[in-house]
Image (cartoon, rainbow, N blue to C red):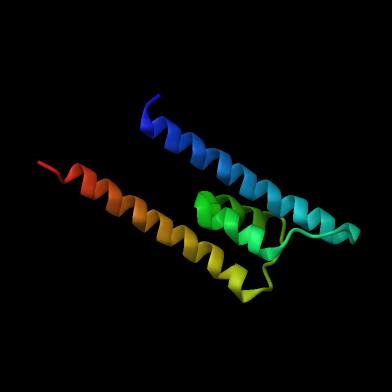
Length: 95
């Protein structure tokens, strides 16, 4: 399997999971059930799911009052895009 397909598949899955986990935690918050730890939500974002968790956060209106979520999740996404661009340029700049 091509490495690009593997990476893209991973990013799609982790972002879908990040979106879903925000919805699940919002649902649990409404029901008063056991919540997903904030560290877990950030772990999904840190390991490549920052776009999904950010979209889920705003879609479900979940954790938007916490500054570290409101600014942290989009910041992680920007960092990950910059890292991806840098890696792509490093790979394609080779002679």
